Length: 239
Image (cartoon, rainbow, N blue to C red; front, side, top):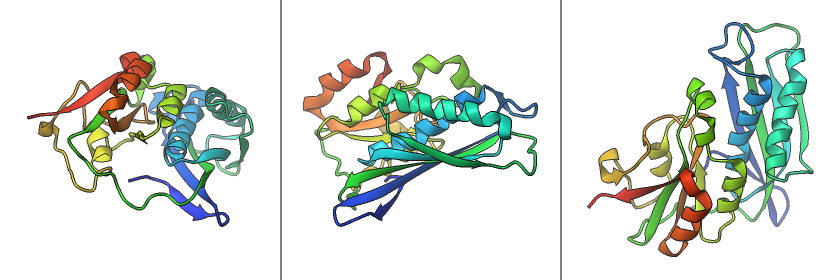
């Protein structure tokens, strides 16, 4: 269900590791998408930190692997700090390394976020019932489309708030799309596109987790709808 690694830390806590990478996005001439390096690291951090928070962990460190060159380092760090500030992660420690022996023709970074959680991750997936409600918060966006429609991406602060609601499960959506992520969440139900009514494309890449899935019961519907505002997209099961 979750794209994280979970390791015992002590008798009560686990270390959760979540990662993301980015290639051909940045400031080099041959990059497919031209954006500042601060934007590159911000969105890569966004993916990893959302995965970490979704798994119930409190992020405490980030590790950056930089293949963009020495000159990109400060911008990349600023992007990570920007994301951390949006989440109130004032104590987040940042480390990393730069490939400085050789110059790549395109930009590339890798980023991992480490967090601590109480107890092990649940082994079981969710059970789908008639009372289960599913929403997508944000829109699936990738590449240049994200630059042009950035306002449709779910804010990190909103993810943090909804993720903290009791009896609500969240899951960031990545490059394989909403439907793929959704079908990893339930042990007793798989969906096809034809099974659901949706305002968003269920099979499209969501790039750097520009949207996320929220699963909850009917009594939380209006609260989450109000919090999410225009980012809220309910998934209705067709009769």
